[in-house]
Amino acid sequence: MSPAGDADISGSALGSNDLLFSCSGVSVSLPHALGDRNILDGISIDVRRSEVLTIVGPSGSGKTTLIRVLGGLQRAA
Image (cartoon, rainbow, N blue to C red; front, side, top):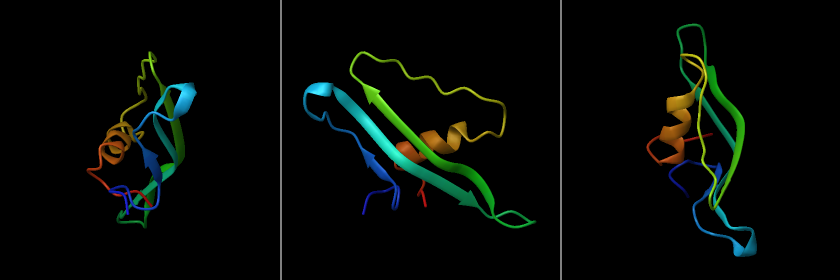
């Protein structure tokens, strides 16, 4: 099992399309006083050679959670 649970995350080049990193269906829910809170819901990303990826959004939108999941520091559902 990958560090990110059931999410499909890979970091190797896949053939001639120069795919360096790919994830599909990344979801994270965290416990909250009023019930579980969906932080990420079905996020999918493909990064190809020579591309630059930026992650932007308002405070609390899940940017850090996404980076932690992609880095294997937090489990995804």
